Image (cartoon, rainbow over all chains, first blue to last red; front, top):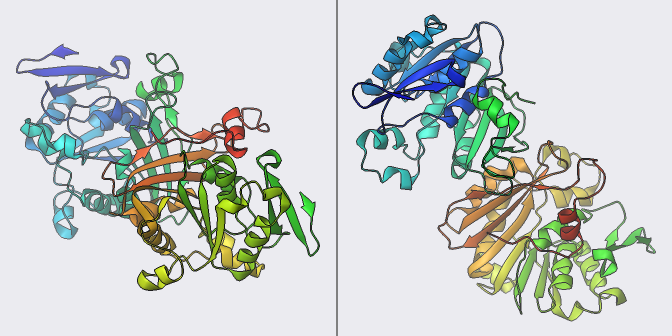
Length: 259
Length: 259
C-alpha cells in the first residue's frame, strides 16, 4: 500500500498483479471479501461479468486479472467511488487488463426501462457478482458519511439488487455474492423463483469459530435445491497463517467452482 | 435390534441404556437424527422437555435417559405411533426413566384453546425439541402410507409447529430442531419474532461433503442475531468410523451446548 496525494491509497492485490486506488480510511474499503467474491467466478473464455456496487473496483478487477479473456462491467452509484474506479483503471499497473473493464455510474436498484437506459441491459452477462453493503445496524452507526452510504442496505436491498441481477444475467447465468450469516434467509428469499441451485458456503476465520461470511452462488432459472457446502476455513489451527486454499483464493491462483 | 411379534423391532440406543419399539420398515423410523436432536438439550436439574412429533419416542427418551431429572412429554398425533410410544415406555428396559415420561396423543398444529384443551399448555416447558417430517418432494413419493403421513410436511409446517413451540415454551426457553438444509429459510422465517439467537450448525457426513442436516437452536423472546456455527462432521477422513464427538452425541455421552 502506498499513500496517494489526497488521503488516498494505492493497494496491491493478487501479489501485485493489479492495484486499486481507494480513499484512505473513509468509504467501504475493499480487501479480502472482494478477493474471495471474485474467486466465485469459475469461467473460461470471453465471459461477461457485472460487478454490482463495485466501489473502486477491487472484485471486478480481480476477475479481470485472473481470467485473461473476461470482460467486466463495474457498476457503482456513488460518483465519488465511480471516479476512484475510473482512476484505478487508469493506473499504469492495471494496463494489462484495463481495456477489458468498463465503469458504469448507475443505481443498481433502477427498474425496467430506467435500468436499461442507465446501461444495465437485459440478459447480457454470464456472471453477476455482488459484495453488498452489509445491512448491519452496528455498521450503520458510523460517523463516516461515505461509509454509512456504502453500508446503508435497507431491508429489501437484496430483493432489489437480485432483481437487477436476475434481469441482466443471461438464462443460466451465475449470481455470486458474499454476505454475513444473518442475511441468509433474506438472500434465499430474494433468490425466489429467479435463481435456483443455491450453493451456500460458510466462511470461518478459524476452526471451531462461528462463520463470519457466507458465499452464495445461484443459477438463473435453475430449479435445483439449495445445498450447504463444506465450509472454507481461512486460518489454520495456529490462528495466524492463511490456509493454502484461502491464500490461493485471496491471490487469484484458484477459483471456487460450483459442484 | 430384535424383531417383535408383528413386524416390529425393539431397537437399542445409547449402547443399550434405552430401547424403542418401532414398526419394522414402515413409518418414520428413528435413528441418529433423533439422537443428535436430543443432544441439543444441554440442561441440568428438573427441566421440562416437550418432543413434538415424537413418533415412537426416540428423541424424547434419549433426553430422559441422559438427563436424570428431566421430565419429557412425547407429543404425537398418529394413534398408531402414540401406541408405539406407550408400549415403548412399558418396556422393562426403559423402567429407569419411564416415570419421567408421558405420552400425549395430540395434533401439534392445534391453536389457542383447542391446543390447551388437547394438553399442550402455555409456557410450561424449558425445552421443545422437534424432528419434523421432512418436506421433501422425493420423500413424499413413497408407497408407504404411514411413512407418507410422517413426511407430509406442508409448506407452512414449520410456521405451524414453531407457533406451538413458541406458545408452550417458557420465556427464555430453548427450541431445538434438526432439518434438511433446503428448509433453512423457512425455519428462520418461522422463528420470526417468536425466537431469536438462532444458532445453526451444519452436519456433514464426511469432510468436504455437502451438509445433509442442519441443527437449529433458538431462544424464545431473544433478539440476538443468527450465528452460523462450525460444522459437525460425522465421519472421519476414512469415511467409515464416526468421529469421537459424533459418537458421543449419538450415544448420550455429550450434549451440544449453545455458545
